Image 1 (cartoon, helix red, strand yellow):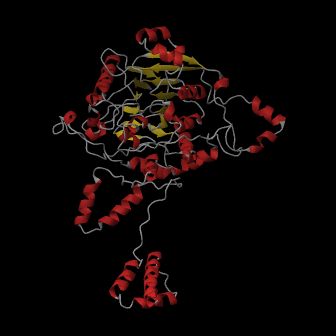
Image 2 (spheres, one colour):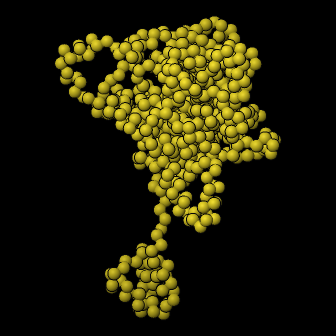
Length: 533
């Protein structure tokens, strides 16, 4: 399989696809797949631009909207991850991945897919230590702080990726793993980027969680971007560094006979998943003339008939399902299960068992990723909005995506954006495509009930939460209409002369008046007693 790897796209899809076309003509080969390592900038309209964490003078609509609206179609299957310059509101609608445009697929916060037998994993965002232990608490419209923290890597995504077993062909990230520069031409890198020296000495250049992930998974290839330079490295691995697969669900493993333990230890590793001795690391530049922003890699794969087949990874689906209870949408720090923390019976190894794999695959008729892309908002109009840089616009409101709702409903997991909205007392918007309101208008003209239709649509599309939220305050409760307090007040005001007769309701204990009415009667009774004295 011929794979084109792109560094930071920065919305220049037309230039990237044109470059691929030139390479195909010059080399006489067909590029089967394009991988983009972040800063994709999938801005559909000028409202999406307002969610990007860049100075206003750098806001540029670029060319993605043409592929979103259908004006142009991506000539090659494109898979990308998020970086730190993204339309965060759009990507947050797809936390587990999905189509952002026809033939352009986003891997989500973290994701694993298979393309004709090539197993590709990815993690979006950049690493910031002060946000790593938090939950996904952000939602649009963003504040000055959340518009940046929304693209910071969280511990849950790294934890889930560490549960993977077997061979992984490619891992994509925006950040570099910490210390990766020690395995390449460090002197040449410092010659081109001398200001990297201080961060190298302090250990701040790169992501420490990604370094742990590199040692644990040992992929054949690792592609990255972010630092706007081309850099290659070869990282050797020891078989002892690879993450062991522990069966923590059985507490009786310590009571096994020594002979059985020796038999297990003497078994050779499975031939289907041999350990990878070296990881080939490659970081690429951003899409600019005379810069190393694109690289063609040839990776063995299953035969390709027509266009490549994009499929879900069964093990990844099982991990998402078994770790759904670990999702947090709180801003405070929280900790995940570990071997040295928590109770002994608490599960910390979520590598799927055979039963879990069978249960997950039974939820899907096929692992093929459905081509269910739908436009949910209007695309940018260059004729009427060409002066968008001089417009003052607000950020868009949160929106749910039908792709995420159908995926979460099929797998039985929660949408983090839904949880974040509910935790902050927000109403869940109805996920619908751009064409659905037109259908509702025609339905109302034919005499159908609009409210019933809206409830039916929300029941189908909005993913119900599978667990209770630990909210600080309960949701507000509306007072029922059956309370008769106003009627009692009217009776008292109508007959002030017969006020002494108000003792009669107290003798008949059929209805207990409200506390407010009791206090009013006591005050009146004291006045009458004073007059008699």
